[in-house]
Length: 102
Image 1 (spheres, helix red, strand yellow):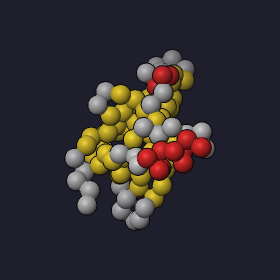
Image 2 (cartoon, one colour):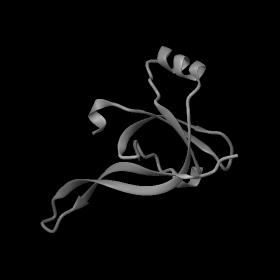
Image 3 (cartoon, helix red, strand yellow):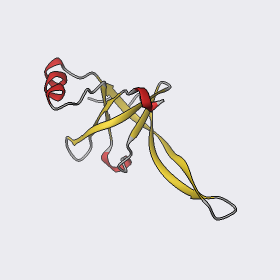
Image 4 (cartoon, one colour):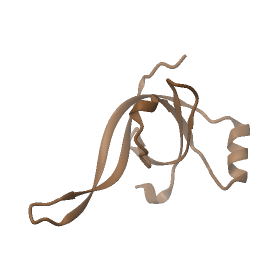
């Protein structure tokens, strides 16, 4: 049973138009409720064989996810490396921490 007790911020890079009509890059941010879960050793090593190093996993509602590529949690930024829909009510976001996420 998920508790939905963690706040995460989903981040998608986008563009806005400034007052002069120029396209300016801007992060689009949305904060949602999630459940943070640890990644099992087996899952971690299997992902490592595929060249992925997941740090953690968040379970969210599928209707709240709009293909964002970054997640912020407790002041740290993560990259989404894998998305898996468990059922109609739960979506797993596997994320990894990279130096360039700051």
